Length: 206
Image 1 (cartoon, rainbow, N blue to C red):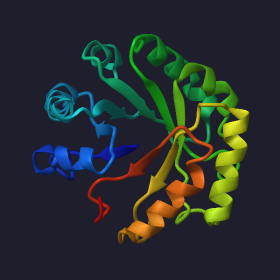
Image 2 (image 1 turned 180 degrees about the vertical axis):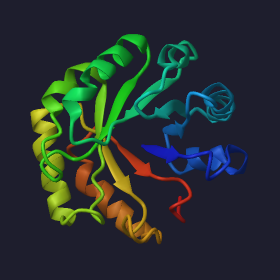
Image 3 (image 1 turned 180 degrees about the horizontal axis):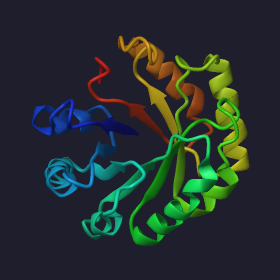
């Protein structure tokens, strides 16, 4: 059970990690860049370790310090939102090599819902794939969400962690009700190995 956190919007000093742990969060995905990764991740890891939560660096293509992050015993989560996945394959392979010994995951668009995302190419090079199954931004409801999770978890066993949104849509960032998020979690839970909520600061519930 993960949570995306962008410290540039919500400072880590304002987040109660004990409350996150009590709410069932096991992993946090902290947005960092080439310029701030060391400072931000050091603070995040300290707070997360104190309560028993795992830390991951949430990065975008062009991040050059995957090996240094891995040496900190922090996972690397590469956000690759593209319609040209093959062009990023070399970077993905390199980052996989640089992160041996820690978790390496990929955040991508949902295949089928949003074109061909070439999951068969990227699956061998990551521990898990996190499709952005944001039903507020795609023409799919709970049934479509459940069917997608079931289908792709069969194709890629133990490779799918569902990314779920905690707000209405890209155009409307009003938080959804807690019951809505819980219903989405329950829809994917039988098929996936976990979920990550996008994102802290755009939700009003634990």
